[in-house]
Length: 429
Image (spheres, rainbow, N blue to C red):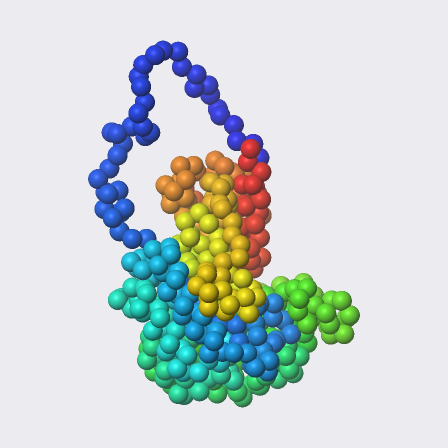
């Protein structure tokens, strides 16, 4: 797609006027002053890489507890990084919108370690001055009444449980250490500890080895029976560094569901969840109340700054992406010497910002065209109108003067709309 100017703007040459600034002073507004005096909000991500086992489908930076990692040393380094980053990037005064502990499995940490990390956050950020969303990931074997109570005491109000499947055979094939009964027990313990005061999300993973239509329907019904506030359906993707890729793609030892069958699984999930009054807020997560959505994910996909602490964690500040080293020993060593563990980054161009905003924003089902024009000065319909028309005629989206909305077909195909619009934008010259 080529961006062209419709008419000539050439003026008659003359000496005056002199333009001291742009835009002209008459366009300046007092309201901008108040906006500038307010600190921009920020989200925080804490990476806990430790797990009780490495799942066959996992491609994240994790450390198996069987390797006997030095957990106290890592927690100390993490707390040191929190202090250094807050000072280095002048983040202490910025209001915190959401906190997310991910991994790995954050709940494999001892209670005192969780308290230590949260204390470091409180000391260096404006945390919990207002009711923010504080999410923690967990897996069934790490859930206990005492640990759940500690999470509540330190301010956690959203728990995300990696269940993946309720079928024992499929759980076993995926390399998970729990079984169906332990999954139910973990959910029950978490619900009792929360006493209705926190939201619980269950992750289900479609496309696991051995999955059939019958086993998938079974997992959906089991998830709904628990009454949790949020259910996330991820598509299992066989990355090259996973056991699933080695056995299911390279060696053909295990049979993975076909693309067509996995799409059928998603169609079944969409229909069943909506019939149970769970509504989507992204193209893979359904909730039965609005407060159960992940504020960390929602705001970061809307373009809000976020900072990632811990080995391999990454963040987005201003116009830059920043990522820590993925080497555990190097991470702790750098923190011991008082150096930030940043290993690489990316500086955004104006076009990068536009592409990122559209690509990630479309994950949230509705894209605000008015907000986009206010932020960038262009109508998205002008930049990629032909592509929008094609997507709409294909039944993937509905377009109005104010927003783009994913249809059920658009939700089913996940990132397709976002990727298609991003590709169109990248071709602008």
